[in-house]
Amino acid sequence: MSSPSSITAQAPASPDTPPIQPLTPTVWLILIIAVIGFAYDTYALLVMPLIARPALGELLGVDINTPSGTQEVLRWTGYITWSSAVCGGPIASGAAPF
Image (cartoon, rainbow, N blue to C red):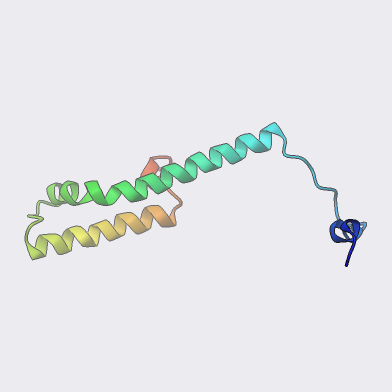
């Protein structure tokens, strides 16, 4: 049977390993902003399919209830979904510099 101190004992850190630093308020702020940005991008990607079909049907001037109109809308939906996901959200959120 091992003693409790031998279970929690850790190997000594090498001299090249820096000590663990506590999270500062600045780091917490950065993490919170990153989480909010990730949540917004996820929301945009999840809501987009609900609004894309009627909006693209109107913009493209196609009847979304016909097979050819559905194919055209699906093609453009794919372009929009993948471009926003690949770019990390700036295009979908309007934060792109162009």
